[in-house]
Length: 182
Image 1 (cartoon, one colour):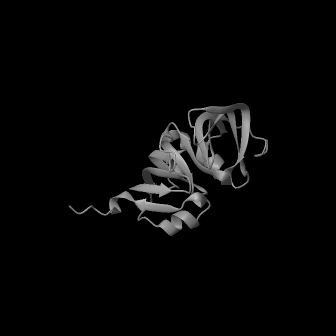
Image 2 (cartoon, helix red, strand yellow; image 1 turned 135 degrees about the horizontal axis):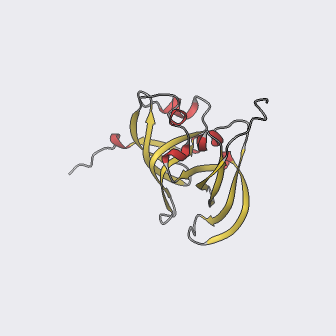
Image 3 (cartoon, helix red, strand yellow; image 1 turned 135 degrees about the vertical axis):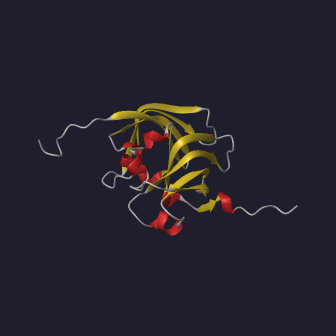
């Protein structure tokens, strides 16, 4: 049996996908590499969401439509939110193969969203390396909350979230906030 025809185990995971105009809630099919594997796979540029419920960002509680499957280009996705940290993928894959990491509380902004959460990185924080080097297009953020900038009632909390690094405008470390003067 060749490697290409070897049987694979797929499973569905609940996901909340955010684009610049829509929130899509449904299920994505992943293999053993989890969400990280599918979102960072350079051989596939699209994502399928099954049992997809769509809502416009400016009316996040009003259902626009419901489809068996919607397809979207991964490069247009700002963030994908998962219910459990384990849904992102195997521990070694999510951490990039490193066993010891440092935690960095961050605030990340895109043109549409603000994300607050925890990044786990090997060694010191290096913004340029994180955003420009390597093959990962989506970087993990844990215990994260995403809010639409112009629509504060759109708020999604996630144990594990993947952020499209090409959409990132600003990243600040929360422990480098300037203390207000009294």
